[in-house]
Length: 442
Image (tube, rainbow, N blue to C red; front, side, top):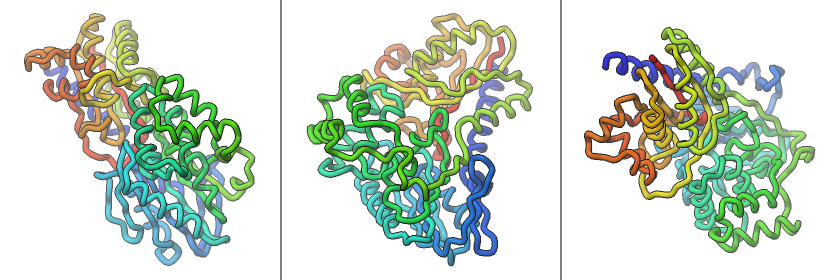
């Protein structure tokens, strides 16, 4: 038992190292400098974008919005900043000196987010030539600032989002649909600006695709109406989405609606961006921490994706061939196809599925497996994920539960709660997708 307890403690420390590495406040501090009236913005290639903009409009949205905005307010003097707008999810709010903080719904959009999106769009449109619109983008922004195209209503947009989140579609596929139902996503926000615009972006998607982070409101979009339709058809929800949504997408497909802004559009001549952090940085920090704790480390995947329970089974199969103590690390974002009525999220489902697969495949020795969301919230629950070990199933069964039945009902939350294996971190103020840690002591 002492070995398992140590493995669990180490897994938590390694996970926390990944969270710290995704600190949005420090990331902004490393990429902005303000001296003698000039703002210097560090670009991805190490060069600087500099300007003496007389007015800087601060706008932020996403789960890391408050921490990012706090750093900006400390860097840029108040007399250069306009009254900023910061939109984040409930639980991640932090008072700011100048910018107004607005709360909105996540993962499902709500009326507060719709109102915030309208205000944010107006602020961008009101910026005068010669000024700078500085936008801080982080994960979760897609749901937090819903602004559906007319005549689609917010309720209809929410209905589509619910269907997409429960059908097994990837985040890229979900965002491809969202972009073609929105006035802001897919480069729509940049289209509103009549002046210089620059986005500092904290990535929560695999491969750091800027067009996918918060559905790419400030960058060109390479998806089409046709692809949005194909996603809905391929996941068998085309006939379930509202009629107005189907009609809008069909009109776009035949060219009666304008496509989202594409690469080469002149509007992006005045638009820039900087990627300030992402999942890969957190995985690297976890590896450093694991080595400091004495583990030999191995990267299992830096783009982990697929159905959560299947990915868990594949990870167990790989672990069976390891014959030495090791920390197996991964980062990414899996999906869950909802067939049941239980509670949980992709990380909790993966943790429960791993425990079951380890038992079924005969994974021997002592082990601990952690799967957690870096934002501190996994699905519509108060848990960040799960931390299981080779005694987890016994604890569930001792509580009178059938873990197989719970997994089949998508009820990982109650299974992990009974075995005291829920990963509880609270809101972290950041979001760079998910992290996985498997510690083996064969």
